[in-house]
Length: 132
Image (cartoon, rainbow, N blue to C red; front, side):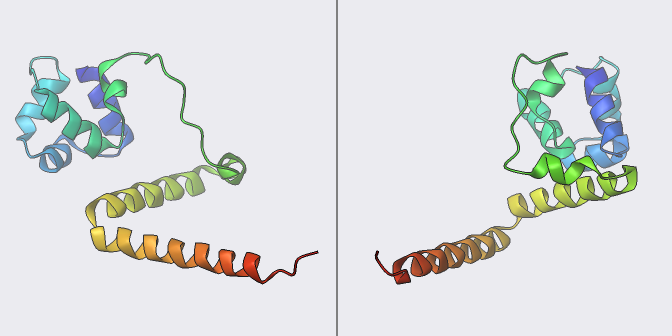
């Protein structure tokens, strides 16, 4: 598990100190976990997974026996022609957006209100159509 945490941390472009701060533990403990000497609680493992934007399965198992999540319509197509720089930037934007959604109830409410208005607008358009 320690090696998988280290790989995920490096992929997330985080230092041990950054991960420790995000999880609320000391950097030495991160080092011990990554080297296999630390025995983190389930709560710490979940916090590490959340900080690294990975699933707990990814940290616990070499090859989890699960299907990859399916992305809603067209997302893969949008990303197919991106170069490395665009992919990196979009990944960063997505991670920050996800964090903002989870950390800010005000932002979530604003998005939900916008979506509700959009749905109401579509319903009005449907109601205004003449019957054949």
